[in-house]
Length: 153
Ligand SMILES: [Zn+2]
Image (cartoon, rainbow, N blue to C red; front, top):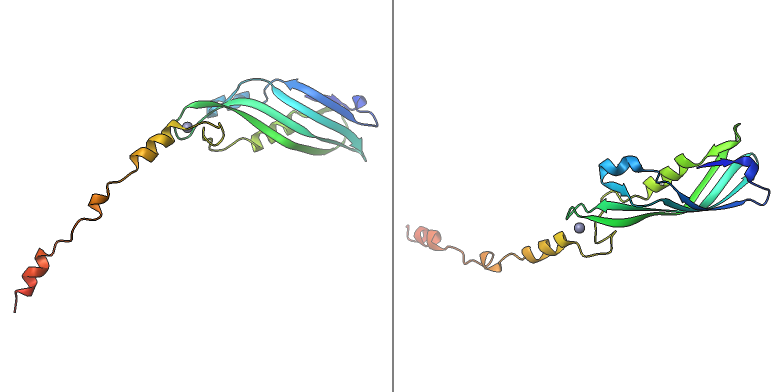
């Protein structure tokens, strides 16, 4: 996403729209883009620097680390904010900044119940299967060895 400084007027520039997914390379890591990146940005120039604030949303499909099932998720960066010193070129590429912020908001160990808002099938399985029979723990102690010892003079 390239911005020409000429397009940013004194009162700033508001940009809203969609951009092709910036993280297609993460498909190998179980993060698959499910649509374009949606953005709403406010840009401005002050004291030789470009600033931008806004929000980003990237719909993806993640894989739950527990049940290994894919589920939809929106990576959201609600407080995107950059401040770039203008050093020469009039064309500023925002792509690396947008990409970095998306990666920062990507859950490292996605759970389909926590991030996907559904019931994780693996979790239900663990909870019903985790009930250990109490009979084992309340087994009567074996006193026979002690009884034999008492018989000795
Ligand atoms: Zn799950």
